[in-house]
Length: 309
Image 1 (spheres, helix red, strand yellow):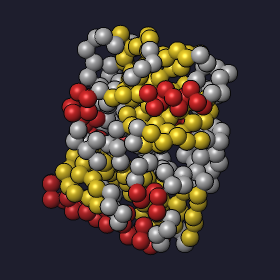
Image 2 (image 1 turned 90 degrees about the vertical axis):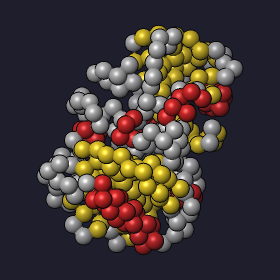
Image 3 (image 1 turned 180 degrees about the vertical axis):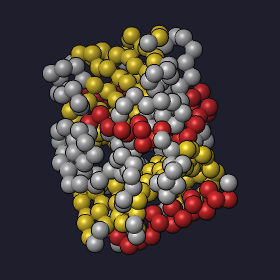
């Protein structure tokens, strides 16, 4: 760890309090682990710990520290809107009340002092955060493949990291529009060298405020953990739809949401971050129309990759 005053060029936009006072700010530069920023903010309820990084081993926009597995959270969760996104509040993996949000592609995690259950303090600190304009300008348009630590660095043993590192990644500039007018221009595609039908694509707006994460895997793939299985969960998602091999789970209105379905011998997974209009109305659309949209994305990316070869 190094002090924040030292030169630090992270692959994410830094957020610091506008009016609240922070202390003990440290950075972790990329090495054995990914880059991160950490500091403390003192309130009447105690000292809150803030951690920031670029989440590249799981669906972007999902509150990873609040989820004990793909489908369930450690506790019931609430949410607060602000900063152009939505933040989620619940117990984290250490049993402390925490807030998790993805703001402009930065994973922000705020942890309460042990024993504190003040959601108001978490919300106030979240809404007080301001971003570095220099970081915003520097990172605008920089794709996932260039931001990601695990695209180019060894993994530490977690299978989530291996799922990113075992692919060969490239970046594409292409225009993508959803049926509900979410626009994207920033695409990264990872393809497995021995199983080219196994791939992950990250489609984002240039500021990473909106992200679609696509995965395609053969049902009989020899790879370990070729895809996450969308199962019934508790505590976080509050909408579920299953019909003829099509499954959708979502946090109502704000997102995020996950769609999974079969396409011949393949399992397709589409994850939508908070902030997408897809989330707000996807359950009003027919499963077939959502499936057709996702399939159109897979086909468009396949065409773009073949042209780039």
